[in-house]
Image (cartoon, rainbow, N blue to C red; front, side, top):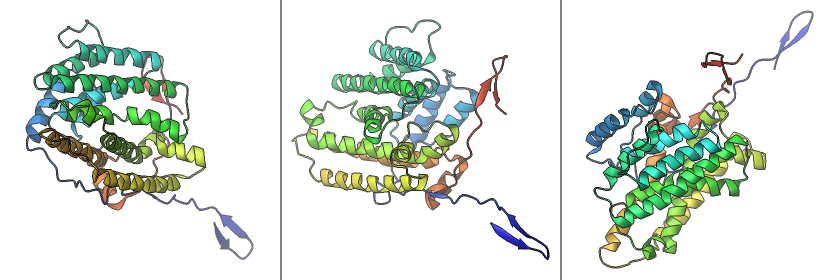
Length: 351
């Protein structure tokens, strides 16, 4: 507020103030897995996967273009078609209620369990995407790897249905109940299962307390990291109820910056626990130890990959991702006007 003095009157002019930028935490500043891993077959595999996925016409041209511009160079070549499949599910289930979401995920699970069965004519395209993906996997996956992936993927899609129910009923979780759901909807568990598809890790290895703890810590770091980079877009779209920043604000009366700072401290504690448990990885003997080392290195790399993709993939920051990654500064986007349905079926922005 500025006082403007004149010979006869004092005027008070209200000058619009620009909200200060938000500082997002640099959660992986000390993470021991740097951003230099790049599969040597990246370009070839990405081109092949992109051509395969485009053949389904699962996305609108605009959405497909956005997807094609995403950079997955940190992820193993195998993960390209897996990511394509996951984003089909994400794209469609984000738009439907619980009943329709259940139909979609049942379609996917049936395709995974019956990859040789032709999909019904007129079925949602996600079933055929899943069927063809799994046929590729079966060429090299071990029986144990297949079994674990399907088991874990079923848990993932069931959580996606639960998320649709939360969205339909505008459910607001507290932090603890949210994390129970988010650990499944983030997709970390099936992503980790991809890492062991060509392995036959015994149950005593997979369920060893230290390895279970490392997976859990990595999953929580993925949850926090994803919600940090996605929050600005989600709050603008009014789709932030499934974001831990929004939940911290609602539960503890924090503002955005305070919630971001809280996540920074939370993430540091997760990383500290990770390093402590990494030093406790047991030896099982023989070639299993090599597989365990490869598997856990992959789990750690997923944490870095998720963070890098958040800035380089253009989904959350557009062309400004690398700048945001460096400065850690963002300005909150304005709230989008709600879309209303026109009689001709087209969408329009409400006045």
